[in-house]
Image 1: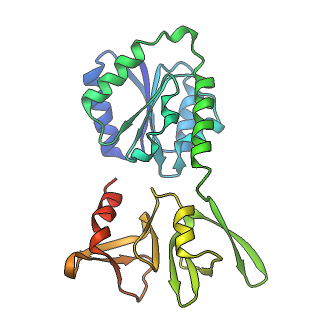
Image 2: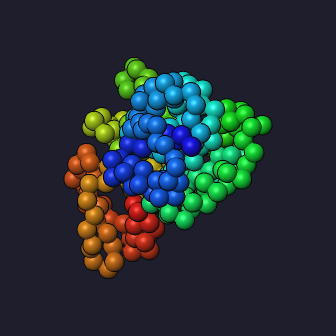
Image 3: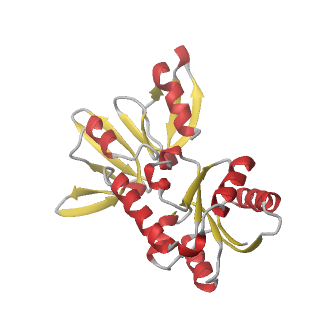
Amino acid sequence: MKIAIIEDETPALNRIKKMVMEVEPIAEIIGTADSIESAIELFSKHKKIDLALMDIELADGQSFEIFNHVKVNCPIIFTTAYDEFALKAFKVNSIDYLLKPIDKDELKNAFYKLKSITTTSINYATKIDDFLNAVNQTEAKYKKRFLIKSGTKLLSILTNEIAYFFAQEKAVYLVTHDERKYITDFSIDKLIKMLDPIDFFQLNRQYISSIKSIQSIHQSFNGKLKVSLLPNIDDEIFVSRERASEFKNWLDA
């Protein structure tokens, strides 16, 4: 069995490689990739791949983008740290997923499932298309970008550029990772419904933060958590005792 592994974290890659060889000793790992670009090169170079283990979140984007550039006609086991991706889309035949950290028994079951399928009559490229359609339908409810007015200009800000939102007096501001600040047309309550909960969390009535902007967290009085954000802001930001557990679970997903 010829296997390709797409994973951008070296410790995770080494662990998966070791686990694969323990579960399937006769397997041959023919190549690895740590980005969308290198994965495209890998699939272009190797036409005969029996299985791909593919992390969803790569440093340069989601691995789903790979399928827009190269034909992949082999079964795929997606790996992800977020159980939000464990959607009905993964029930598409011959496509599986494993939650990180990967459990050896679960990997063994995934291999067993693969072997139990009659592969000769399956068009995996079609299955991947079905899967991507299901994912796109699920993700459609979350905004990918915000149209912002800046003077006489209109700017399109991608959600992955946004560090946090905050309410001040009667306005709500959007702050980007590179410290640009704009007024938005939405309230905090409306914004949290538009944003992917994997990436954004409402800290309190004034702040919504992206996962990448959490600089530090400290225990505070009465069970509250004090949060520091990047870019830095003068306000003291607290997560209530009632939401502290939910916040920790979000960070640890």
